[in-house]
Length: 302
Image (tube, rainbow, N blue to C red; front, side):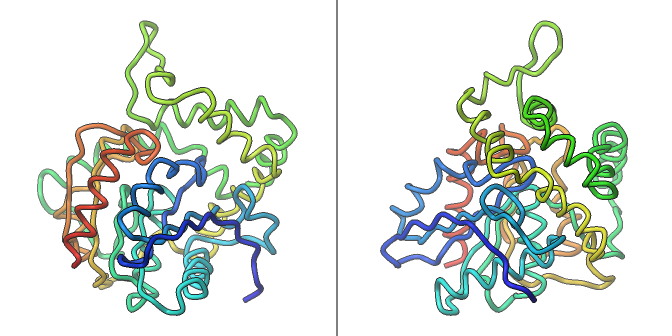
């Protein structure tokens, strides 16, 4: 495996609690976790917040990197920082996908993982209850309308990426549309999402500039292609993840929360919370709720 250039924020605690790895997704960035870092450090954790391979300042990369390989790269980072000490991972979007693969591939390295989007399951996991079947049916309808971006970035990342890289306004439109549709936001009188009810202009512009400034838009989309190439959209039939898992089930309007019973077909779910507010960018939207739930999960591991 060729070495990769990985940017990360590392803030040291007093070492009394396990290290924490916090993972963002697309079209987010490491700044999503800004409000969580100081409280978690005060709890005693070392907190590491990387930019995923190909995102922001983790650029350039040597080639297409899927989420499973990204997990291995980030495990190497943690192993080098903490000399083999076991750690805890939190993630949403691609961060959740990567954390799940880290739990699969490196179970002895993780004390636990806490995610706010459950998207990969054993190949033979099937909805059995009425609630599970209803959820999957509603999710399929929403995905048909909302996941064209995924197919484009999975199959033709360069076509879109080069266009976006050439147009900061186009990049802003592409990203802000996702924040508007995926976050848990009130609606304006005309039915459009009210972004400013949750985010500041500075937050959203900073996030956009982490794609425009480092010219990372093209390489950030490669993770979609990488998922397709490495076949990491599901686990093999019969897979059972043994690492303790926590789920913060935020009311994401597009990536609907997965029922605990269905997640338990694949995972060792020891903590599950139905959150009262917050969508896809949970740590960004509702940092206090995310912090409280992550702390509760960690407390349950000891």
